[in-house]
Length: 223
Ligand SMILES: [Ca+2]
Ligand SMILES: [Ca+2]
Image (cartoon, rainbow, N blue to C red; front, top):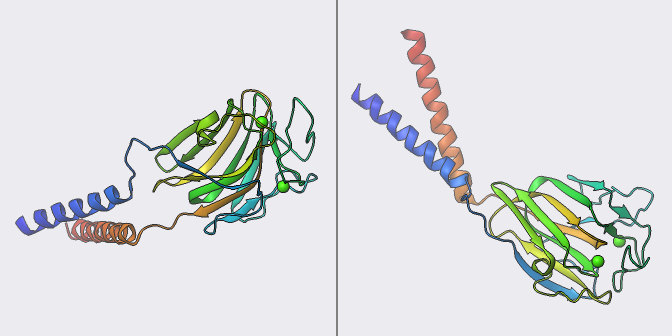
């Protein structure tokens, strides 16, 4: 009996190690926010792809990358642009963009987990919020936290903002605003790829679990 008990303990330890390797810590860190490309709506971080450009006002939930879904909970695309009190124009961006007015939201979901996300934002306001939800992750940034400290609320301010999840993975991004408005364009994202060590731990853990299950089935059949 002793060898079997030892094997079982080994399997349990290896499986636990595998699961521990894929589980993120409970306390999440804030996304690392960085600004780039002042007044340039089109240049993306080299490791990201364009996800949504909001240019088709006739199909406001259209996305340009597969695996992404856009939901507009009262947010608008391509209308009311530049109307004072509702939506401020984005500097150097003559195309349609997304406006999230007060009390409304817009949500982007991704089939793949994302390690970073960026957008072009204009007319920043202290009451804009962006929430990132994912694998053991739920973090909301508001106002100056979104714009790396900028709180000028100027229509002349437009900048790409990059959010790096610092090793966490995100697949839901919710933009909301408690007043008019949160204006953005050209969403871009980078999909997460599991670390090789994580894959090895997962494969080892599941392989040993499978071996243990097969052993138990055989043991049950002969009992
Ligand atoms: Ca656009
Ligand atoms: Ca605004």
